[in-house]
Image (cartoon, rainbow, N blue to C red; front, side, top):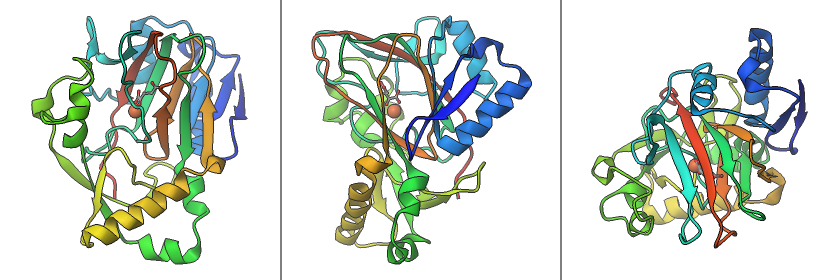
Length: 274
Ligand SMILES: O=C(O)CCC(=O)C(=O)O
Ligand SMILES: [Fe+2]
C-alpha cells in the first residue's frame, strides 16, 4: 500500500490496496492519512454492496441519509445517479454533506459504478489549508462566530431545486431542521482548525445583521474557491473516494449531458461540533 498527496491542500491517493482486505495496521495508517489529508482516493476496487457496507462500518455507524433515494434492498446506500435524459446532478455546487444536522455525518464513502466517457469530475477543497491562509485580521474577526445551517431550500417540500430532480430526492416532509456550528471548527479528531461554512447549506451567521452576514460569508467563499485549495478527482469505474465532511467541501461537475453517471454513497455518523 502506498499513500501519496493528491494536491497541496487536500486529498491523498492510496495505491495498491484492496479495501476489503485491510489489516488493522493498514486501517490505522489509512485513518491517519484520512485525518491528515481530508479525502482519500482508492483506485480499482471491486465491491459488492455488502462489501461497501462492511468497509463503511469499520469507520463507524452508518448515517442513513433521509433525502437520497436508497439503493434497492440496501437502505444504507444512497444512490448518486444521473440518467442521460436528466439535467440536474446531485451535489452540483460547493457544499459539505449534512452540515444541517446537529451531529453532521463524519464522512462520506462514494463508490463509482458508471462514469461518463468524459467529464463528471468532482472537485474537493481543503478547509484547514483555507483557514490557515486567512490573514490574522480575518482569523480574529471570525474566531468566535457561529453559523446556522439548514436544508429546506434544497430538500424541502417547496424547494424548486428538489422538484427539478424528478424523484431522486425523497422525504421532503423531513426537511426544515437547522443547526448552529462554529465557523472555525477545531476538528473533533485531529484538533486542526478549519473553516466550517459552505454555500450549499449555510444560511446565516448567528447574531449578525443579514447584510453583514451575507457579505462575510461571500468573502469566505471567495477565499475558499481559489484553485490553490482544490483537488480535482477524475473518476474511473471502481474508484472509491471518501472525504471528511468536517475538513472539506466538494462539488460534482455537471458537464456530461446525455450520459449516465451512477455512484453509491454511504455516510458515516459524526458527533456534535463545537
Ligand atoms: O457525484 C459526486 O461526485 C458527489 C455527489 C455528492 O455531492 C455526494 O455524493 O455527496
Ligand atoms: Fe455531497
